[in-house]
Amino acid sequence: GAVVSQHPSRVICKSGTSVKIECRSLDFQATTMFWYRQFPKQSLMLMATSNEGSKATYEQGVEKDKFLINHASLTLSTLTVTSAHPEDSSFYICSATRTSGGSTDTQYFGPGTRLTVL
Amino acid sequence: QKEVEQNSGPLSVPEGAIASLNCTYSDRGSQSFFWYRQYSGKSPELIMFIYSNGDKEDGRFTAQLNKASQYVSLLIRDSQPSDSATYLCAVKMYSGGSNYKLTFGKGTLLTVNP
Image 1 (cartoon, each protein chain N blue to C red):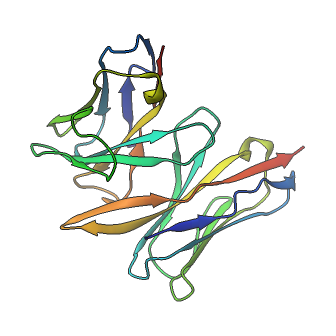
Image 2 (tube, chains in turn blue, cyan):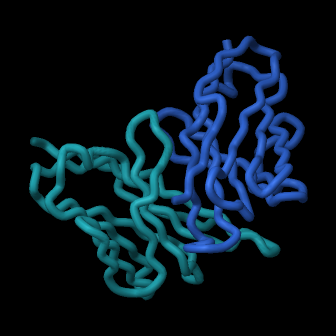
């Protein structure tokens, strides 16, 4: 299989706090991990691409200092939403591609983290 | 701007019928194409991928690719109410340097009526 987990699945926080979301590939090593955001009734929007041991590549319009990404190992990437505000409330989803075995093109998605900022 | 276009639907079919979902893409150099299914409130799950022109079958699902027409489709045979979901077409596109990314369509909402 190709299982990706995310933690937490749901978080509610006060405005101004920081929230960390973990993304783990459970049964494979991930060359690359991706972070997406999805607002209600809209499609997935790529926020950033991260490769283990190097700096993340952010999409245009995504603030690097607000959305901190750390890809510490081939099985773990974290997204920290710093000083969260209500407009950051969204569904955050990570995905990962394999280093080897099977399609190295295919992105396998985690279950998502629903962030609500009050 | 590189784009992936899908009819947003909703597409409504009766149980047991064939559902046909279509997708066009703008980047002629794209080589990898994916169909994902997303239930409401959940993350996308991979249905299948296709790289070569023609048809690729997996159970009740058939993906069809025509690179000359920049068109990819997904057929669902013997549609079931449990197939009701949003179907996302995704195309792997070059994004600069040595990087590639998936560009998603907005998705087609499919409803299978019992």
